[in-house]
Image (cartoon, rainbow, N blue to C red):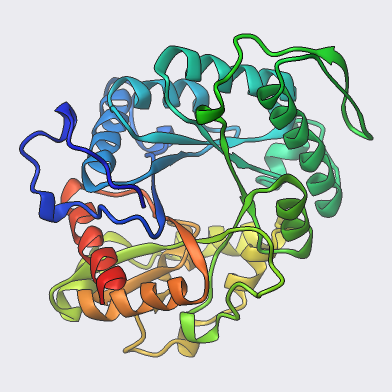
Length: 352
């Protein structure tokens, strides 16, 4: 993770609470608009963005689906309230032409001189896709996303006109203005939980992100994998495991409604990671295992959690790093204090 220099947003913030190491990239996640009213949502986004910057995150993931406000406009709020934090914008190809997505990156780069990261979505909620008239099968969606991302890259990297003819998109002598400096070229991430996703990551030079198993069950990044890899994982850590689990259970209580919603979502999902995590039961992990799927099974979040004392959770994170994962996408932080606890974990994982 990059060493970030103090700025006006972080004045007076304890340097010991910052991660500040170069080995990995860490992204937090922006709150969703469905959990706030219009009067407070913009303020909440700005708060979480400033917290994330102060602890040293590389960037912040901004979700997209049919129920949420536009991620590009949310990203502009983030840029206006931070100095170094990079939005990681979820990009759904069916929402806009690749030229429009490239134009957004170029425009934000021109206005804010900030790098944008793109989280390329090959899928989404099934009902969202059907409502938009998209019934494209799983693997074909990844093939479409390869074309889509290739066009974005070519438009932003070339000062001359770009022509492309594929199965899903065709452009002829198309030029991007304003041009984007090489230092602001977007970072690209994509799900690598399926064979189609990993193939897409190779094709577009993206970081392949997966929802991991416990480190002792992970195969890790093989020597033949020619792309950087990362994981999406939540963390609740405290000085003692008892404190951590108390916080975790209070934040993510079991609910029958949530379990039913998860079960229904599973029935219509063709997501490889969704099926992988759903097939795992709580009994497999045991009481003393920090790897926890409670929030996932209760439809409260979409990633596994690591819960425990700082040292134990740091060992798990170190395990993922040892397997070759260099990008970590965290869940939505409920408070600045929570990010400070997470920063302790990553420092111990990297320094231990």
